[in-house]
Length: 346
Ligand SMILES: NC(=O)c1ccc[n+]([C@@H]2O[C@H](COP(=O)([O-])OP(=O)(O)OC[C@H]3O[C@@H](n4cnc5c(N)ncnc54)[C@H](OP(=O)(O)O)[C@@H]3O)[C@@H](O)[C@H]2O)c1
View (cartoon, rainbow, N blue to C red):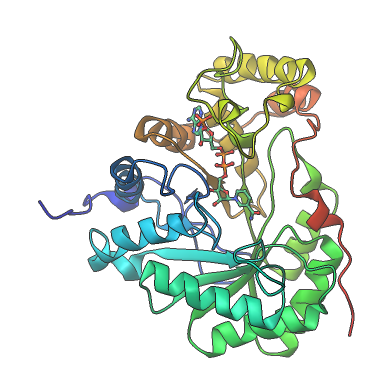
């Protein structure tokens, strides 16, 4: 049976403008960093993506290296967007990125013109798309002049291969410089993609203010701190959880301090009548500069649970104060090197 999208798909989520830009992603977007690679079940991935679209998630976030193996999430997504979702392409925002290592040799990562533009071509081929909606610089290159990376982003737009550009994990200073260079070239910086959660609040120290001032949107990734902000680790580590797999979420991050914070936050979520995962998403969205919470999901049930966060997004002053007591930095920001890097000037 060909897929037919749900008629009521636009009745579930609000769509929030990217700063002063018109483009408006859903309040919750879905990322394909993990669970959608060549090693994962393509059928489960398809079910998650189609359920997300049925519930109003119009934005799917990718990067050249998502998998494993690298590239396989784009290939998998390419099948779905060109098959099930083909009639809906104009309703969907697809993003991809270049910055992390993708191929061997000196031109296989970072921010050179050669790498960034070759990577975009490869991404389009894997996804069998003519263009992506948003193309990101995935991390600041500490060795290549920012002007060169920005020039490559400009070419992505002027060549019609990307509609908008974004930056990810750039510091406030680097954001300001990239924004100015792009503006001088007539290109708007649509959106910034930083990590942000109750246990990783670095963007509150300047980045959010900078984005608000410059009118750039903000899509916060890993709002569940890779799954830690749920009740799953409170009684040990389940075999199917991310911390049990090789990769980005080391079980060393499950420190007694972090688990104590999670336990206290879980109790607050229960009092609000929602899961901790739902409260974690609602909490990042409380900030008016926040455009979208960029979640991951391993199962359809997780996705549905997370999307139900929208049923209760209001916080009282007392609740926020109580959350603040436990929402402390848990040393979970794996992307802090990029945010600490200084842009190289010409
Ligand atoms: N720009 C960048 O550098 C960058 C870096 C990282 C991520 N991202 C983007 O952000 C997206 C999301 O990252 P993320 O996967 O780390 O986000 P996340 O939402 O913080 O974590 C997702 C994980 O949490 C668990 N989970 C999800 N929903 C749940 C629920 N309702 N209840 C309990 N557990 C739940 C699942 O892990 P289990 O398998 O443990 O159940 C799931 O894979 C990525 O796909 C990518 O698009 C960008």
